[in-house]
Image (cartoon, rainbow, N blue to C red; front, top):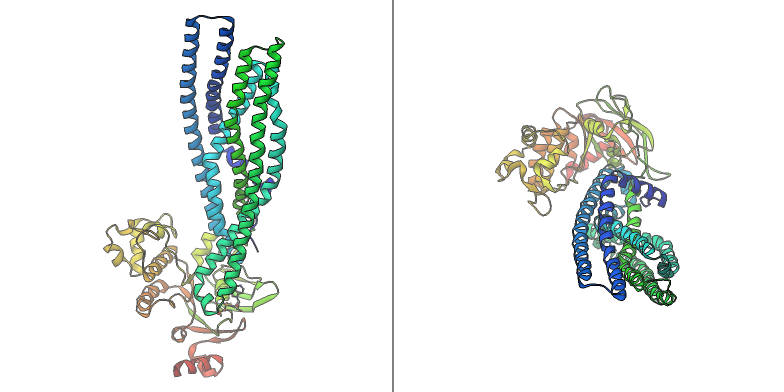
Length: 577
Ligand code: ADP
């Protein structure tokens, strides 16, 4: 499964809506650029008049005056163009910043189940390659397009004003231009989309290979993975070649469609002069316009090309917002803190349930350990209890309201999942903590850090809470990173926690230290611990044994040992070890 890609209509609509917010700025850029273009157009016109007046006889003073006007036009054009350039760059930066922020907001609220199913490569490709491509166009392309389009339109207009008969010669290249651009634009979009997708595939394969290098080695998948990489690479190569050829063809026709009108104006102009239908000056002016239009035209087409690439990327970026939410929040508020699972089923792959209707009533404040063989469905059930995935059958409710009917922030105040995966975000320690509670002050952060035994090492840092952490700055140890994550939990303050392998990957010394931090966090909350070490089960109030997607035993440690079932057997064998 891949993440959706927006179709052309949606992309255009969203793109225009996006630009609409900046209509005023766009107007300023176009206006100032038009003035700059008019100043630039004055030069060939002045030269044309000079040619005519010299032909019919003129004075040196007249020539000097024209020269002065030329200098004035150059100065005006330079100043206005610089102003327009600056305004358009500012606009480009703002557009890009806004797009990036919107995108980030959407990505961070994507349903986890969709992201997991689509694989992270696709999403990663969109956040990196696609955003990069769009960034280039928004920052420099939109400005250049505005400049190019205004200049081209005004130049043609001016040529017709000077002498419409001569200017007809300019039209010679247009059919070729139109035809080749159209052909290109039609073929380019699908090719660039395929190109982007191929690169996303490479991203995915390489990321998987690197992240799971150990697994690849252990299962001797090297050859297979290499074949997969080679395949992805060959695909990307193919599309890269296709798109390059498309551009080569385009630029060849473009070259021709610029040379043609210049030749036409000169030959056609000579004929008109011969028959006294045009002046030498007018032909000079229009020929100069034919040459002058070339640069903005090429620039324009180059950016239309880039725009195609960006549109393909934009379709993938906007596509993210088309992901169906896996839940719709309603207005109900939980009445109480009891978590209840009723007939919970879940299937990762349609038709293949890994949970077969689990019922469970959690008592507020209790410690429940879930034990069972690997692959029994413990983690899956834990994710249901924490509201990460909506169950495919049955329901999980808190205080009578289904978890999936709660808005995200409300859900996290009720129940949170703690895993061994923790992430340190690039920013200050304070930034990392504020993710849980945007309004928390320094005192609140210090209390949270103190609660997880982390205040000591934070206070030893020179910049304290303002220390920059994450990749490229201070690297936290895994234990510190976990403490930071736990401090976030303290700030979030959910009444129920689901722990899944929260401390299992850490070295034993760190684990002991962390368990102290953890037990501080757990105090006073309902805790479901997916137990990989049986002593967790021994200390729990109740133990649920999960096998084959069902709870097969439920009771206190002593009761289950006395009952002599699965748990008793597990316990006996663990004690022998
Ligand atoms: P446990 O935590 O008890 O080891 P899990 O909940 O991780 O068990 O897995 C239960 C079943 O679901 C297993 O058969 C596992 O292969 C399958 N499973 C787990 N995660 C996924 C996934 N992301 N996609 C498909 N199947 C999965």
